[in-house]
Amino acid sequence: MGWALISNLYIYPSQCNTIMSISEISSLFTISALVLAGVWTLYRFGIAREQYPKLQFDLKLKILGSSRDKKIVELIAVITNKGIARQYIHGFRFNILTFDDNTLSI
Image 1 (cartoon, rainbow, N blue to C red):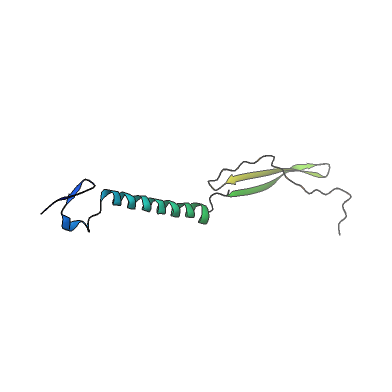
Image 2: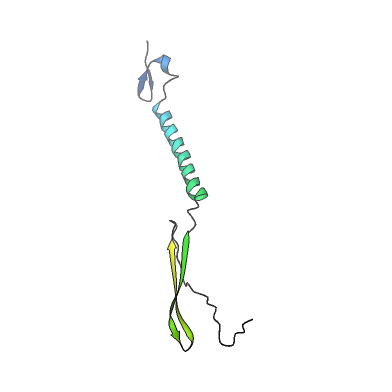
């Protein structure tokens, strides 16, 4: 009975159809790694949407007192990044609506 050399593995000729060679096993690992990486990327950026920032805004108003019948207030904005995407904030501003003495009440 003769021996066959397939990718440095010595096997019997009758077993050539049932045993995979090293190159075939390597190919299977490569294919499975590519499929797994694709599924992971789809989950992270398609389903979980982690490429977008998840910002939480907490706005607070603290009344400090009054002066000449006017209220003195402190406005506080706390911005928390709940996601993993980096977010840069430049020039953050509040828009405040105030009423003066000439405002009509209906």
